[in-house]
Amino acid sequence: MALHSRNAHLLGRKLRALRKAHGLTLEELSARCIQLDAERAPSVSYLSMIEGGKRVPSAEVVALLAALFQREPEWFLDGTLSAEPGPDRARAAAAPQVPFEPAFLFSKELLQAAIPELLAQTGTTGRQFAHLLIRSHQEISRNDYPDLERAAEEVGARVFPLGVEDLIRLCKHHGLQLRWFECKPVLARDRDTELRSVLRSFYDAPDVVFLNRALQAHPARLKFDLASHLAHKVLHGGDGLKSAHATGGQMGGSPHGPNAGLSPEDVLHAWRDFECSFFAGALLCPKVPFRRFLSRESHRIEAGEKIELTPAVMMRRMTKVSAYPHWHFFDAYPPGYLRAVYRGNGIPLPWGNMAQVTDPCPHWAVFRMLQQTRGPDRGSQISVLREGDRFLLYACHSRRTEDMAGNPHVLSVGVDLVPALRSHTAEADRLLDSIAQACLGKHGEARVPDEAALAIRGAAKVLNIGWIPEALERPARIICPRSSNCPRHEQCDVGRPSRALEITELRQEIAGKRRRARPAA
Image (cartoon, rainbow, N blue to C red; front, side, top):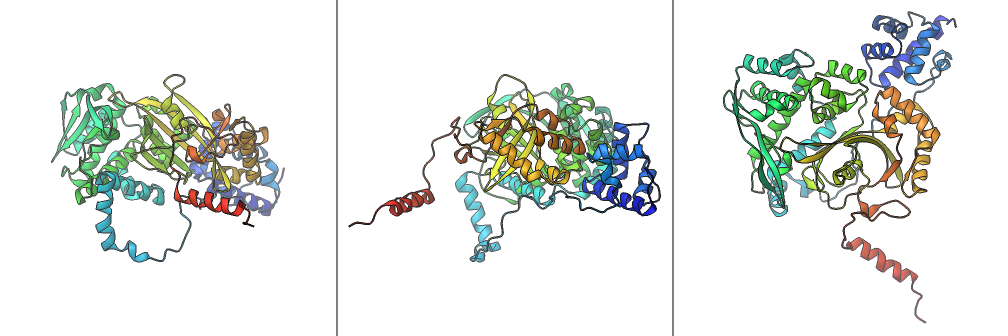
């Protein structure tokens, strides 16, 4: 079909708006086109000219772009600038703005006095509290730390993938000495639970890194430890104010002090640990080449095995690098500890890092897999979650694994599907409601209705996330933040603990009885 110059200009503007709405660069759009049809795929320069209205694309190129963005070719050719339903980027973990009159209670002086006492009373260590603050900072900032990204890219020159020998050469180039030691796992107590614990590696100021020889059998873990200690040398001159890498005990993270309370050293160590971990991820997975890798592999976690990356590094870095911003990540240990949480999509959770879930919904993929000792060690799930008077929709991929000490845990990464559906179709809310009603009508689990499944597959194709269509092969499940707040018609009692009535519930019960009572004659 021949296009007038005005129509060609409008097509270019629509293509540009659609590309930017999905967070794609021209290079990434060209690469995605090559994946679909290498012969007809437009080059970066040609796409730029199309967007600028300087070139009229052929019918084949228009059809290719339409297939990639799950649009009809006529949408590009209709000569209009119809409004695009953009992703709902405002949906984050923001709390509703409620006026709070006694603001003086949040003065600096009162907080400095109250927080240490609060931590001591609850048995929370300063390091744990600092990690909770860091997690909140990550979620508010969308995990955006450009200075750490630049520092890592300068050190690694954006080489991808880096092998163990490459990391060793970089360490030596920056003046680090590597020494090996032998240390087997031991039993360690974490609260009321005994876990196997092993010391993986540690930094000895000013320039020595000690590595457990057992890491040689785990190159993906060895690469992360080397990258993290290299980060400490580059960012902080190797002053030694950095936690050792320990697996198991204290919930598998860097060991915390035994005493509750808060000290400046706790905050410093927690932030240093985070900085070095983020640097390590950026060094092992530089943004541009890793994003291309994810595109080629359709965001499959198992692809990390090809280049010796742990599932945790793959999942964590994916939430940062993906063009789609609405991700979450969990790392859970039995019986229900969430060691790590990232909620870039604002998924509602009533608990945080290093806290045991006392009332878990057994239908969350991460908790169900924690309780299973048999069956597949990985899988994908579509989940419907009710928040207040609305339903939310998520897709996740979960994987059961073991840490280096042999403790089982579950890693889970997921996306909020609602912004993608709203970008894909104006019927997103109706389709979401159809999924929720189908699940409610069948005891909380049901196949996604055909129309909704078709829309989800279309959105997943644009996102290029391969495990979303796989999740559609299984029933969608209703999940809830707490099992005691189950929205199912026949509430699920699996694993639900007894719970004391709260004052608000007693008030409602008493007030309800008075209203129902007839006045005395």
